[in-house]
Image (cartoon, rainbow, N blue to C red):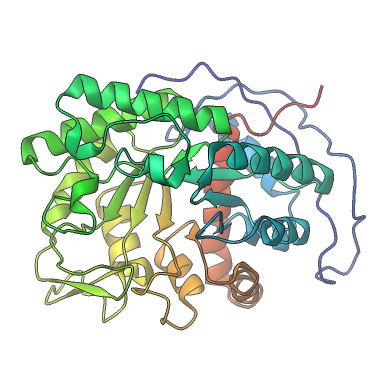
Length: 384
């Protein structure tokens, strides 16, 4: 992967008091001291073994209280089909979220909201946010209204067009301040809900074109995301409305190893159950809540070390699962996307964090992965 020419160094963060969670209250506002030394990292360093990067992550993590640690895992949406701007501002002030999905609004709205969120985060002493979007070629002009038109995935005819489209989308996202793209779709084209959104209509193009989209996106300083693991193309129904099931072999898992080998930084897990599969049966749960899928298969067998994000947690395929946020994190997911109620999701995770040592270690791992990504994106700037 071509590394980005981005320089990032860091701010150590004091955290503010929240809900009498510590024996010694902290001031509500405080200066944010810098780390002892400046370091230079780029997005391409994320998957590496740089000891100084790991040390920088530990230094930032050590200055967070448990409210802020758990917050790194929570990503609600703002926009027409998400929460209101005022709700996000409330969550931000409560220090219970670590990022925001920009969902169905105008380019100008999103730009202004991100500037406002960034400003308030600095005032509150919060870590900067990851800002995401469903900026797939087939969806970006609907998700980000008034953005420059791009070809839909089904209209792209060559590898060069894939690269130019990914670059064009990245330009839009960078102009807004969005640093995390939930694209590309690497499902085959069989499913009517997701099939038209990727490059899977011709199997020989699916992986090379998806890889080109990923590399171009990440070379532009934006996290790319392969989705929907373990494969959404061969189920008939729509996980937006109800839980769907893969029966038997996981035929689309083969799409992921080459993308992982080429350095994709994020993978989104689908709300799809698996049955009649001795090794990966999800026991009636969606894959997002299944350790067999997220940890055993994706992390351990496929050796994926990037960020693992759930599909939206307000979707029909998962919303009726009790304590679905903590189940998803325990399964191995790092980011809980679009919980129905971010406050409740944070409280649920925080209770488990404080009472269950194994869950605490899982949250710690996830939070450090998010912090590492924020460092490599250049979001933690050295104080001038």
